[in-house]
Image (cartoon, rainbow, N blue to C red; front, side, top):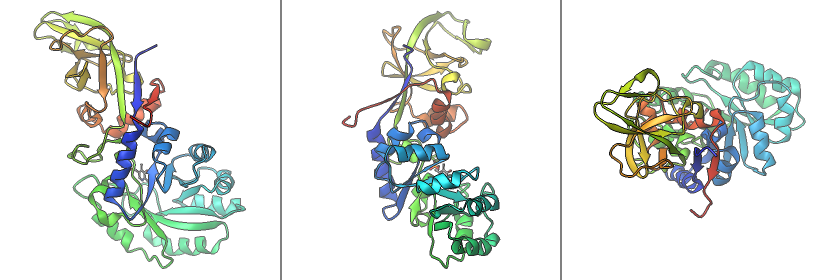
Length: 360
Ligand SMILES: *Cc1c(COP(=O)(O)O)cnc(C)c1O
């Protein structure tokens, strides 16, 4: 069997969930499980995060799967419905939907669900991606509070720059100006806002990335935030090459040895979700010693420098990211964010997920 796999540590998920509660002790937590729980597995992650008051997902299929596995928390579809037929199913299974435009509102009203459907009314406070502009709200409030087809309403918005120096102030101001006569619950904070801006906590928080032990910030590591890495992407050395001075390794001969070197060929490539743009010098660990990659990442393989590591053999253990090699450090080298790397394992569909048992 190919030696590549991703090991998930549920205890680390539980630790990170506790950190959410440390930061926002008075808010209900809607743990974000979209993209197969950022690559960590929907159901297994939901189990570890079972103390969450709610879960959010993208699709109806994911929401149904959570219900089928017996999760009875609130479940929210983060972009709401895409087609009218979804309304009846969501209402029957008590799945909440984001309501971000007039088309969705029409679909709900046309579907006439037997049970009123709960909505998270999404307000565009400046990100300009999804949601109603504040001027629309009085009219929308009128419709959704008078129809029998809509039940509980929660107001939500999403921040564009909670992780950057702009922060959330201007969007928060727009949100706080909404005339909330009905005292709808409110939900605004992603991980970055939850950590940095207590004024964003309100009735609900919506953490994603921090649960999975990656940092939402470029300038704060998970150690500084007391978060634990959940996923470890591990493989093995499948070949050892000796380079003479002036020889190169891999496609494009982009890396040339300046002195004699020993190179380990690792069973992991960009088809597995490892970033092709990771340059020479991206950190990796071999047999518990920190080293780095060399040359261009191939589809199924990449290369690490093992010149200074004693006795590395074929079968030597390689951590590509995990407890020792921060996914954020690999992401930074590759010009991306931890989010993308964690999710890409899932989209590659080639990396088996393994779960440490709960006692570890
Ligand atoms: C993904 C997502 C979140 C979680 O964001 P993180 O930065 O991962 O904490 C919260 N809210 C919405 C609407 C999202 O799409």
